[in-house]
Amino acid sequence: MLRIIASRSNVYTGSPLDRVSERRDDAAWVAALMAAEDALFVPLWRSRSLVTGTEAGAPAAVLLDPAAAAAIAPRPDDAAHPWALLGLLDGRPVFTVDLSAAEEPAALVPEMLGSFAELRRIGPALPAGQAAMLAHARGLMHWRSRHRFCGVCGQPCLPRAAGNVMVCTGCEAQHFPRTDPAVIMLVVAGDRALLGHSHRFPTQTMYSTLAGFVEPGESLEEAVRREVAEEAGVRVGDVVYHSSQPWPFPASIMLGFYGEALSEEIAIADEELRDARWFSRAEIRDRRAHGFSIPPRDSIARHLIDDWMAAG
Image 1 (tube, rainbow, N blue to C red):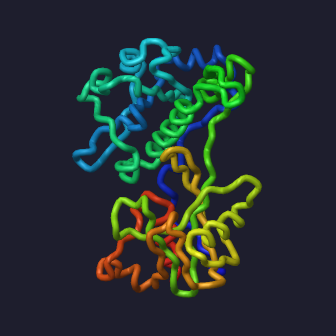
Image 2: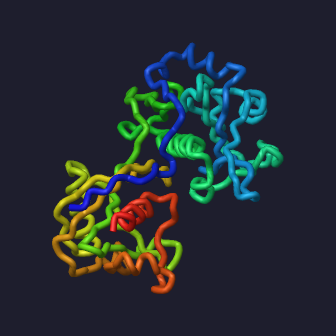
Image 3: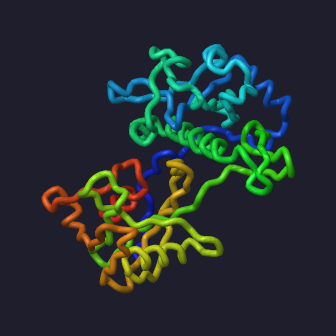
């Protein structure tokens, strides 16, 4: 099986933050960080991030200073604007605050500071560290918004550990941030790669690697083989790891692999894919002439394809 080293870092990786997980339970220390004059705040509005420079094609994250943050969410315990500690950036505390309760973000954040944009649209153009921080904030606060009530007894939960744990007010169960593991794989047979077109894809011409969630009691290699067999009817032998990518859209970690095909006949599962085909390297290089496209460069799917192409 061809072993390919990742040629570049995936988008949303490489966070510059020290997550200081060992100190989040120190309420006095966290309060001091919140009150620090050099603290920074990452605002979110309905999963969108505050950025500037989008019109010029050079987006940058907007990190609010304490005065600007206080004008938005005067009290750190304000239930309308939940917050959480992300970590330290060169010693400076970085928090995120969720403004989703506001109907219009302009009512809270002056337009001159920037605008709220979907992270997937501007993520690849952001500096790597900023993209990782915004992805961290988006994923954490999405989890918070989905765990306001206890999954054990149904009672309300309150944040603890600087917003990184939810604790039930009834049975006191602790709920920690959840990330769903998903395998994503480029299956290859010699000079050809298996790509599929999903019903969910935004364009009719895009073909990408296959992917799926890991099931309980399943190894990653087993998940790769099962998903490919279920979606395309192709049997996979050797499975080789490539890289991983945080994917908070809404709450996954993508685990990238190459798989060696043991069979090449395709049998599509209609509920999963609209189409699947074997593509040669020559066809992928000249994909416009062949009438198809591949995923954007922010995705690990594109990274898997690019590195396989470069190895041929």
